[in-house]
Image 1 (cartoon, helix red, strand yellow):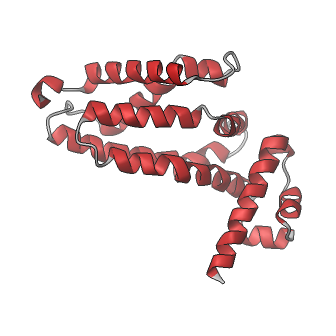
Image 2: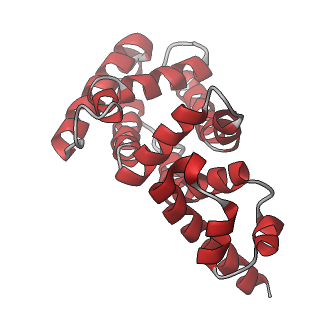
Image 3: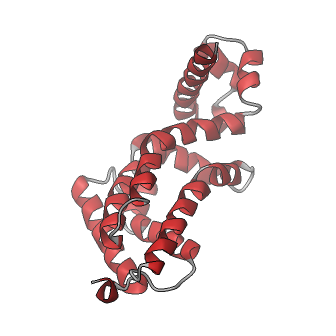
Length: 204
């Protein structure tokens, strides 16, 4: 029964992803999601209490598949520059993917008139970046980072990765980020971050 329940949940999330991508957040309806998932609205609401909850769960499902393992790798890497470089490449490729980009734009569009952005951030990104801050504290103890606010450092690294080319992609100026563009952006982000927060001389 447990396996069947999990299978149904995944079926609902797949249906929801398709509806959100086709209709946008405002145009999507719980009725259409339940129809595509092959069940009733009552069944759908037994899994997700609202459209907001369903949207967030759909987004987090993809993040759990790709980003969570990357945070786990970051937590075991012992060299700060290497950890940032590996993480940054996977992170930027993830946020620049077509599906994640579409959901990001929906969150931005709804942010001013709903609780959607906060709901998503608190249940997803905050948890991931908090894991990074814990590892930053370890790097500080090892002398590879200056003693700073680890949360501020994590937010700065995210901003550095997403600056430049990614924002042009988000705005629709660029059609995509090529692997070469991702490499260039992340190398620059890591370099600036290490100049601001790193202590490579002491670590060496």
